[in-house]
Image (cartoon, rainbow, N blue to C red):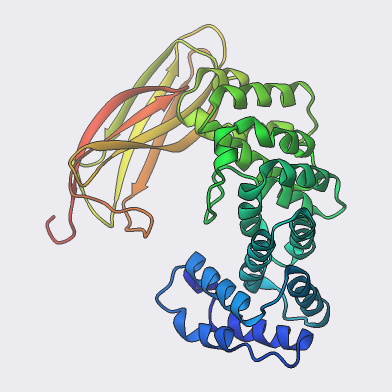
Length: 370
């Protein structure tokens, strides 16, 4: 399986070149042909941007002629699909914005919707949103009624506040309510693919406006279908990890009379690359069943010596009166490209219905020092 950066590579350039030549047989495409040799040191989005800029240089002219070439390539070439769609759609958006005027802008949105089933147009949607948020959202909202699940998902995913790999849209960050009509239209969508995007979008908003998200989720819960509970749980996951009272209450995790023991660590130290085990227990001392969301928090040491907590899911459980829920987990400190470990004192603690307890310290040791 390729690394993320390798998803756009030499073969992508070759496929795109061949596809464009079916639409424009006389095109020279020197910048595009040369782009393949320049990809190696670049990250994924940088690779897409390089190919986008090559397309814009090799296919001069107005937006209309560029869009005709793209549509012809899509119609004539079976290879016009996959990761080459990212730079192509980005070029479409760039060309439309540079030309100005509502005709090019509206057609670019339509073309992105046409191309999104071939991979996704979500990244190229961002500059159009940033350029004219109101006009773009007015066009995107009707996509929620499209017969294509890919287009309906594009409405939700392309407008996410914190879409991974994508540039941020200042207007969406500044006004979290702006995209709610899209989510309201899609949270009961027939496609799990679409509903999962809605939940992720709602979770993005929760990082900016928790109260808005809880209120939105409560409204959905009041008018649910068979899938709404799952959408709401996934959309509130960050707030649950943060112990937000409103999110916990909405999901049925109410306060309870509990006795929490642990975490009890299997060792006082662990080597980077290995794992640390711990156990614990939660006993319900009350007279009613207690619905519990049980997480644990690892406090990682940063380069400056301070600690920062990251919450990990343990279990969700209903514990009867007098019952004890036994806990155990092995937490890996395997080296990842997304996280850097720093040797020194760390800590772990349990979190039950948003309340933390039982902080236990341990030492993370560099490989070869243990």
